[in-house]
Structure formats: C-alpha cells, structure tokens
Image (cartoon, rainbow over all chains, first blue to last red; front, side, top):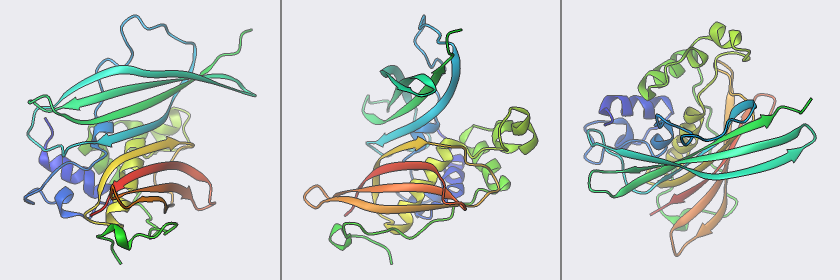
Length: 126
Length: 136
C-alpha cells in the first residue's frame, strides 16, 4: 500500500508540477507514472536459478502504466524472468536478464508492469 | 507554451530543456519517499568507499525526471511507457540537462513517441530513453 505523502514527495523531487501528482487533495490524485519501477520484489531471481560469476549492474528500466495507481490501495506484485539474452563485445560476453514485475489491484486488474534489466559481465576464463 | 492537443504537436519538435534538481538534499528527500534510502545515494563518502565516483542519483529518479519533463511540456499527457537505458552514473550535485524530441505521431491513436537524453555539462549521455505518451 502506498502512502499519499510519500508519493507527492516522490513526484515533487522528480520535478513534477502537475497537481494530480503533487497535491494529495487533488480529486484525481495518483502516483507518478514511473512509480512501478521503484517497487522491488523480495525475491528477484527464480529459486534455484544458476549464479553467473561476474559484475552485475543495473542496465535499464522500463515501465508501462495501464491504470492510475492510487495511495491506500493494496497492490499485488508478481515477478517473472521475462527475457535472457547475451551480447559479445571486445571485453567478452555480457548476459542480460530482464525481470518483469506486474502490479494488480484487489480486483485483479493490471495497473502496470516494470522491467528491470540486469547485465552481468562474465569473468574471463583463466 | 504547453501542449494540450495532439494537433499542436509537430514531428521533430524539441521539448523545452529540463535541468533536474540533483542536489544532495533533493536526492535524500526522494530516497526517503521512494524507500531507497541507502548511503550510495545519500552520502558521497560512503559511495566513494564503494568505488563509485560519488553519491548516485537512483536510476528510478532519473526515470522520474523524464516523465516530469514530459508533463511540464504537456501537463495533461498520459505517460504510458518509459523505457530507459542507464549508460553511465548520474552523480549527485553535478549539473545535468534533459533534451527531448518528438520522433513519431499517431494522430488516430493520439499517441506520440519522444526520445529523451540526459547529458552532463560535457554533453556526455548518461541516460537515454523512449516514451510513449497519450495526448488529448
């Protein structure tokens, strides 16, 4: 459940000026459209997923907003491994994992999805 | 000038440049509000101890800057998708600039696409993204 004041602070610090994101008393008050990427699943990788040796970094985030997310509403997030692919460059192979989290309201309607891309640069074999 | 109707949007139109507030105080307020209150975002010394160039602006905040920039240009626009690639760290207390350009207009669906780039004072790209936006 998201707190109205926290959402307003989130929006204002990002530079939002639209009252529907910054004023909690606005009749259409809602979370800023990128809020879904800030919500972290407790378990990121699937249970039993193999570990890849290397340096992991956040490569990017995508967020799709389908319906407004309002404060005070219980939200359920479901995460899955959405994509895995590799790129090979001069410095070796990089493995990209895309983890998608889907958010639903209590009626089961999807509110948003958010992808987090993690890249792991494989350690060169000695 | 702000935009409220898709008929007013021009292909290739550049959005007004937005210089986001990346001061330590502002990033701290964001980190607390987002539940991401970690030293690597709020403490330069702690971040340097992790091998970082300084405290970092969280990627989710950079993404929030992009959406805010769109709303400053088109206050009633509905930002449906923001796809962001983090190319290099965005360091707290340094100056950054965000540019945006309209790259596609679908008048039937009232959807536009915008390419967005966050650069530093040396004009080096730190973050870039694409947004799909519904306008009037």
